[in-house]
Length: 159
Image 1 (tube, rainbow, N blue to C red):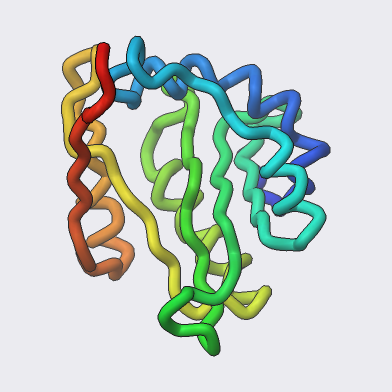
Image 2: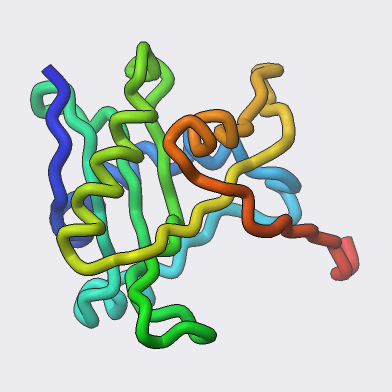
């Protein structure tokens, strides 16, 4: 049976870290130029400040997925609490039926309970190394999200 729960960053960090390499290999572009190198000290400070929201998805005791959001007022809308989705991932073996949809619905429920009024998330739009689209936009739309803006990137460093 799948269970969802809000957990402390520091408590679930070792389990999440064990999934980061697979998560990174599946979704990141320019992996050689921009290696995985999380700033764990800043995450710890964000946890201490109460600005991290960590939602886990468990099958028994196994961490099947996670969602990490940064919670604080938007710089342009300081009276409105926002959740900025930083990480979300479901292990491939657990991506069945509506697993991702349920993870996002539970995030909405738990974030609303802590006073968040707007959630903002991105989605990859490229095809991953397995040839599968990484775009979860259709899931967001199904859940009532609207596309708000697009991001672009350009490598300007020497390589």
